[in-house]
Length: 277
Image 1: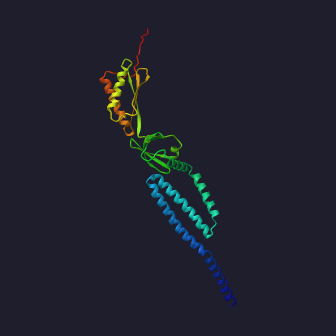
Image 2: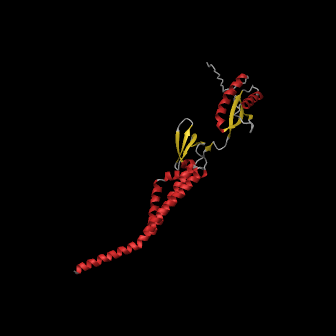
Image 3: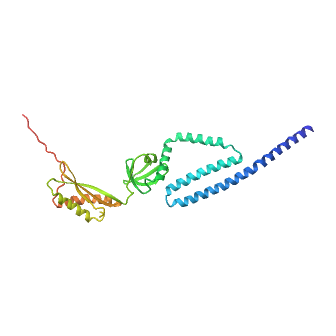
């Protein structure tokens, strides 16, 4: 009987301890669950509102920022909920920091690309659709991700360039301005009429509707070569008309010079042969 009473006493003690634990932690757990549910709802609501506000301005930057902000807020929420329950978050934060350091050392190149992507998305040296020349490639930007930029070249190749290299080297954006200057050079013979050649170039530019009146075209003698007088011709066009205008002018100037009797010299070499006994 004594053993029975002793067992009943221990069971009653365990029940009392369990009830005490439930009374102590149940409100905390319930409050933590409510906080987690409401916090997740508020975070998702905030991210959706941010997505709607920024989506129209810059879809690429918008997706990155919304994902990053949502992830950071959710991590902070989980840490807060854990502390509400009574879990020591100091060691938890230390574990996250150590894991982050290990991952960072293993992914140094990717982190460099990540940082480069952040810089590109924030400072916007180029955007989707721009024509850029970088890392030896010339083409149209198809996509800007957080790690890589995808460029479609004009000979129908797709190039994937790491953002770390793009952010740490020079590049040329050819789509920033609506107009561009077309630089051309034509050589004529030393015996040809310079003024006549210049007037022909001026007439051809004025006849082409793609050439802008303002700024006015420039036609000058750019240099005296070994076998030709070099005319420097500069005209302004819309950015989209630059190369068609350039190619057409090459053909039209050649035909006009031929029709007007103006020569386009090419390097020549005289060879003297001596006969020795």
